[in-house]
Amino acid sequence: MVKIDLNSDLGESFGPWAMGDDTSMLDIVTSANIACGFHAGDPAGILSVLKEAVARDVVIGAHVGYRDLVGFGRRVMEPSSSELIGDVIYQIGALEGLARAAGTTISYVKPHGALYNTIAKDRRQGADVIAAIKAVNPSLALLVLAGAPIVEQAREAGLKVVCEAFADRAYNSDGSLVNRRIAGAVIHDPELITKRMLRLVREGVVEAVDGSIVPLQADSICVHGDNPAAVQTAKALRDAFEMNNVHLRSFAGVSEG
Image 1 (cartoon, rainbow, N blue to C red):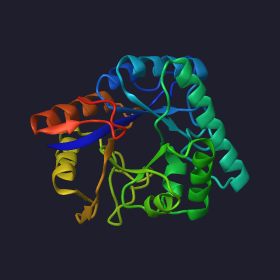
Image 2 (cartoon, rainbow, N blue to C red):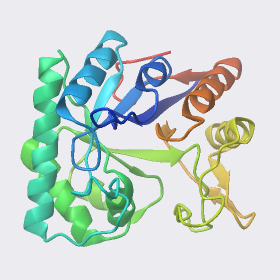
Image 3 (cartoon, rainbow, N blue to C red):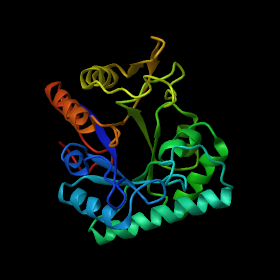
Image 4 (cartoon, one colour):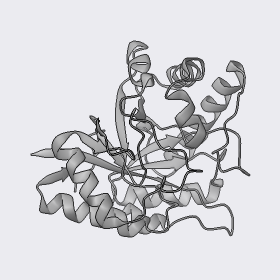
């Protein structure tokens, strides 16, 4: 039986400004990347989402990002190593405190947005994120882009690495994600997304925007929580996986569908 994790970025609402439908997504996913307050989220909202995740046995990860609330963490930045290490440690620590209050713990770290894409290839910032994780808890897994140089960099540093593919994002021929500024970078059609992800799970490949076939070995699939069709897409994926004997299970080995 084929197994795959389904994750989503949650806890990104801020005060009265709602972002996505976290409750519905938590009924579908097996792992939740919870915002830590730097790119999105506020403590009360994050705690509420954590409690809902606990009630559904969903595995929790720290969704760390650049200190960029206004840009939703999607603007490329160049913090010094001391700044980035400190910021990542701070975010993991904050979420771990809230998680303990909710009766759970953090199992992994997933960088968000521009930080995620930067460390995929930038060895200096990648090393900073790795150093921060090891300083807090070296047993935490690092969830990163499948096929990117950061995978081997983190493994060589001794971290457990989980490789991720994106259900709702278009790929370049080199396995990188198409820049969000380019039309078609975000895919909204649940039927197309389901077809692509079933092929990924079965064959280990995804079709790039130029029509080329990119090999990708992924342990987890992400559906962005801020996509307007997020819940519909995640539900369609889960249903398709169940119909095709693909078992949904968190890579942390706790949740299963």
